Length: 317
Image 1 (cartoon, helix red, strand yellow):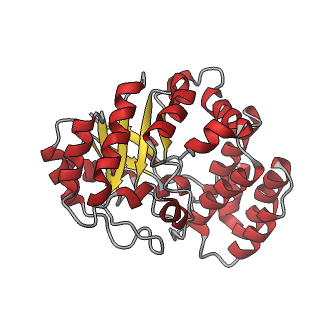
Image 2 (cartoon, one colour; image 1 turned 60 degrees about the horizontal axis):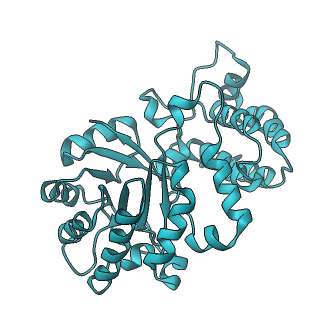
């Protein structure tokens, strides 16, 4: 999720994200598009101006109407625009986007607090949204994923709209995606938080070794320098390891050591050295030991705050 005010007023911020959008590597073209940029905001003019800064580098612009963070509440955007009193404002933003941009406009929403979510979906469709994504939970700054997502509402929304509907929520494994789409009849599934811990989710294969995934991620970062900050890289590695290993006795030591890393080489040394030793037999996978039997058993979640800003879509039809 990008801040439209920063895109317009902070040149470093704009250039950083344009580098990200333009970054690719030989033979990667088929994997890097389509890409959708998500913006927040509550001012139609500002959102449209910001969207014009990035529309050349993407295939769609999404309006975030689901962010539950305290910052969104304080600045009145994201999931705090779902109350019925704000529907006219949202309608004006989506309408301005759909009539002003050269790429399609979409919206990601949560369950509405005081009215039917299907009615809000119809409003978005009539305003010009090319598709709507529903994370079927209510907004809560303190417990952002409290309880299971209500997939019945996703199904109702799909029945109510003519534009595509994407379902978000209740995915922990690849089989959940198929089950989710089959139950809701949605046109696709969006995954955020789980994908941080298991970036190989959409491959359809069994969960991969977290250290091997992390090492592969570091290689990508080396191929594309200046796209991700060290802090971001550390966060991603932490999510990947945490997803399977959060309950291991050595995990707290790993987090401390990771935070002390000064560059990518330090992270790689940590993964290949201490982490592999701490894991014992499972750590032998890093060195290609055919005797090693596989993966960590723990699937503790405990993931952080990037889930709402790094969502990925898989269209299944």
